[in-house]
Length: 586
Image 1 (cartoon, rainbow, N blue to C red):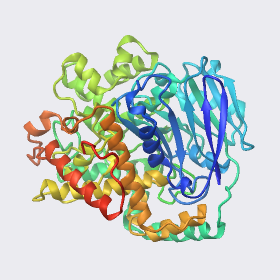
Image 2: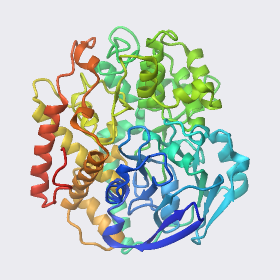
Image 3: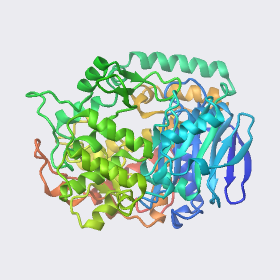
Image 4: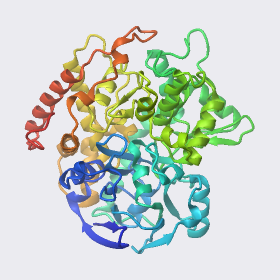
């Protein structure tokens, strides 16, 4: 049993609703998609006060269940115009759970900037945010801790969110208090800024109550044991997500210089310095921390604390998507440069994927040579201060490309493609094309899947299966990096869920909520005016052969949509899920 808060910012009133059982399982991304669709949010202006900003956590929030304390943030995206769920690690979801909350919705907008204080006793108050306005996320967090103490978790709108820049995310505290775990994609921070909420502060308290605490603890024990011996989990813990850069560079699917090449370095001839192997080795030699948990209880520990040659912290974390888009895609070859730019982006609370894609198209357009760090730093300063140029850059690659008439802009539904070139990493490419979320790899990423010789129909099937499982994990607050254990142990996961909330749900329920989530999201985008044409990759992916593989994109949106529709129809029939709605374009 948990409380859900509805906070009307226009009146400073708070409504509490007690939820229990299955309602606590249909959380996160599922709850966001269902709520936004059923409320008709697709038809509203995403930068109007009527756009709700939803924060939702899963049934294990507040516990020490590994990788199960993620928080989902959702609204109509001002970046894409479609549905958006962005999730993050850190401790804010953990704190909500420990204070016996399952989530909250920010309705309407405040007249003045506020800090929302949520106490372990359940009180919600509104404090003046004047002292924090215009400050970076790091300084804001320090001042908030000075006022509210250390045993709290923070959710912060950075300076870019304040002026409603579309690459703004929402920054959450990590276990040591760094406000660097960001729900980054889709412009959710701009919506928080529109509502004039500078920050939320929630108490960390104690393990929440569960229907069967012993059963939950048994689930924690069994899940942890399986994670400890899983080879992919072990590798992720040792090298972090940066290891993916080595894999993508070797496969020829790494974004390099605005997706003009798929390989930065021939690793058989010289050391690849932007990958997890080199970064781990250098970081350990300098006294850094290669293995770090981004949220309480996580046994995967794929984060890191990256330091300079003097052992001083540069950034935490330095992860693959940033290395790919803000690093190799911009022509950078030194992880120290990426780390420093990453730290600046963290202080601004912005999406490093969108940032890297935006700067790379400007470099290709002649504003600077690829690899020009000074140009990138100057752009970030413009974004920080909100100059006319800075506000334009903060609107993201699609709008910047349109403004300057740039042809090679790597976006789908106006959101920048993640660090997997779809000409080579085809299943992930199909996921980014077909998801209602915009080009987002986390919706269905299996980058090493063997795609050669496979038809569009076969690869769509692979994409849809992983999209369903990812949507389910996002709905119950599980990190996707545990999926090599999660996806083959649904009996264990659902047994723990049942112990947590007192339900008797079957193993198949996990996939059911994943599929329902996808259907709600599709229905939302249909109502928002999206068509199959919006799923198409930019032309240059089809026209240009990518070195070194010489591959071109081969999957057209019409074909992808046809096979996706057939897959959803079959899967929903097998699970007895009613189509939502019957006239969906998908």
